[in-house]
Length: 230
Image 1 (cartoon, rainbow, N blue to C red):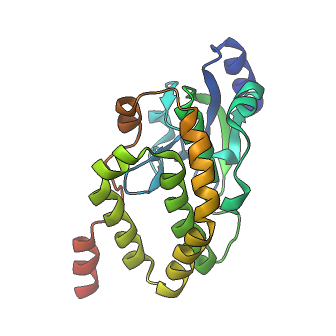
Image 2 (tube, rainbow, N blue to C red; image 1 turned 180 degrees about the horizontal axis):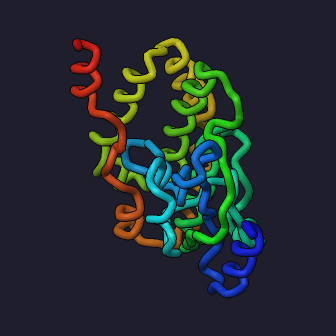
């Protein structure tokens, strides 16, 4: 069963494997992947590994960046070391934030293909305007909370382009602006958390640089523009 697969893998794993990702299958099409582990980019975007691809192609266990908290297993010592979900996130990307904090302390995430579960994406039912607001705010909080200044400077173009990209594609400037405003209101607390998190960081900047990808994994602005012209 789903939970048995996660627990057995955790019991057989070394302590540095602090959390495990499930094989989340599309509720309406169980032959397709909904999420086989999460990734995060320097654009501030996250995506589901394997989404929409045949489930048969994801039968091999292995390390992934992070896990979707909709069906993940976190070991007790992971929570004791890393802390819990950040309640300032409200909804969306809080699992990416937790996973990144764990990675900064040297923990790894392991994908367990036999831990199958059906998943309905966007099950929280938050209306799209609120999704835009939370996502805009939370992307920035993740980067400011967890990324050293030298890496933010190195990837500054990518970081800024990512915010500009989502501002345009969301097409809800009012709620994007509310997200930016929420980020600014939270900034003093976010900076306090940043000092605590980075003060305990155990991995090198070089390793952290490689953990985040340079893939936006979204349609290009050019393709979106051309589609609207047709």
